[in-house]
Length: 465
Ligand SMILES: Nc1ncnc2c1ncn2[C@@H]1O[C@H](COP(=O)(O)OP(=O)(O)OP(=O)(O)O)[C@@H](O)[C@H]1O
Ligand SMILES: [Mg+2]
Image (cartoon, rainbow, N blue to C red):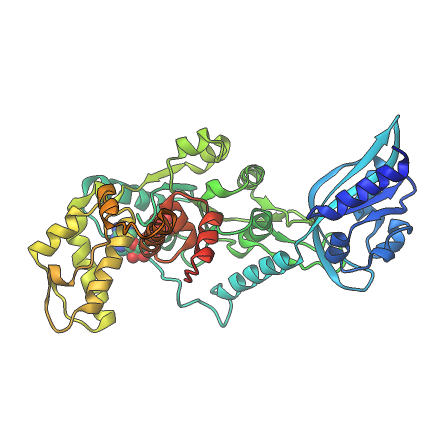
């Protein structure tokens, strides 16, 4: 095949794939520039083809140009986030991989593949901005939805549970990192806040970030902030570490943090300073870290989701909160305290639970733990009228999964099997949604499916939250 043939094949390939592609020859002149890339960089294909890259991107300095680094210095760059101003003065953020192409010891071309993340980038800026607005030193300040918990709010007399509480109380007296393991709804946030608000950091911010709730590529910027760096127009923004300075940062589901970022976090914890993404300055920070996981740490380390070195650094104080099904003796006490708490909110007067109601409440096994019990009580209180006793009648227990045989009985044979299976699936999703309080990540966990899979199903079934 002649070179025109190869050229044609590459052209077709480049226009086929999702990512933007930009190829320059050994002189840095644009050979290929895909439509997708033009869309990403908000310029025209003709602005680039046949032109040297520094003419097409006049506002990117050579030092910051990954194309230049590849072509002149033979340096490859992988998945680097770049924010720059394009030919038309617009700010663009992409994630680039750029490599030199070498043949017989000479660099003959450079290839750049890029994804446009301008929208994601502005989302991360918005998240940080919202977080800043919530800080107490901000006049408009304290977000009323953020409830401050202290040890007085933690209900439980179970012996194992009390051991955990007393370890947490000890932890409040010092500054060590805390690692909490507990399944969903067991009270991890309650413990984390109690430790903070009973420590001498209480007057400083308590911030929380769920590592699973943010796209991986954004988490680093959220935690450590972003700097202008060499890129004109990029925003300077403090990350959560700077915002929480002097206080406590709760990192939920730390095992969802990308492995490389986990080692960066470890370095920060050892050295007590951070560097903003794209920045050059070391900024000292004093932040206490409380990390949580909802699967046993040993399993997460085995599966390669949690770095051992980070775990040992964080697990100075380790708290393992038992499931509610392992401390059913606390159910009557919890019921009593939730009745009191929510009576006030609803203006009702349910003072106690009947024996029958308590039996039903104790028989259930609570995959959603204390949160689920509390939701059941809230539902009962809201339905009560003027009675003072919570009876079976007011209780709406989550339906346990129907036994297999029952499904066979329920199936109307006129309905195709796949339609009926979809009905069952919808029912299970609905139940899991209630159990998880409408939180998609949590719901996906309950169903043991990927979050994206759940989102796909919700869309397919038109189930809105
Ligand atoms: N021991 C407890 N005493 C009183 N209330 C509790 C207790 N544990 C949990 N709760 C209640 O359950 C709710 C859920 O607790 P929390 O948010 O701390 O759970 P979590 O372990 O962080 O869950 P997730 O893993 O889903 O984030 C709290 O809002 C609180 O009202
Ligand atoms: Mg939590």
